[in-house]
Image 1 (cartoon, helix red, strand yellow):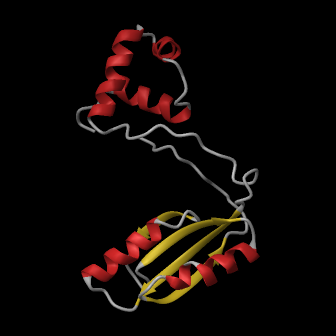
Image 2 (tube, rainbow, N blue to C red):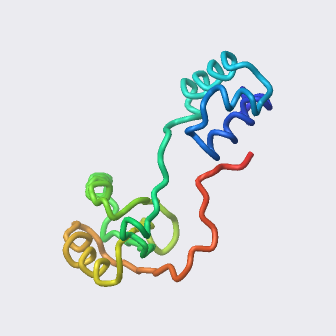
Length: 153
């Protein structure tokens, strides 16, 4: 963050809130002209501060309202076995996040499905087919208290 000044941080904050804002609108909010704002955004993209622009979708409307966190323990920890597990996990669209963690389990998966029957089908027909899974523990979300995609700084 040492290369970022206050204006860069304000640009990033605005883009996190609404990445569809036009350069002209963003410049007006920052009391700047469009050209320097455009150049700063391009620099922030080039330097990797901005990695992607996305649309956040409504999971309920898309019938993916059940959130499950599934902890996974591998049977063995050889490098190629872990790499194969990761390759298999990345290919499953129900898994929207995967973390390599420390503790009793090796990985934490965030899974979105329609309902309990869908989760059971996912576990029985997809997750259980992945080699080297030794143990899993599922945690079902009853209510989402806080969800944000914005980083604070």
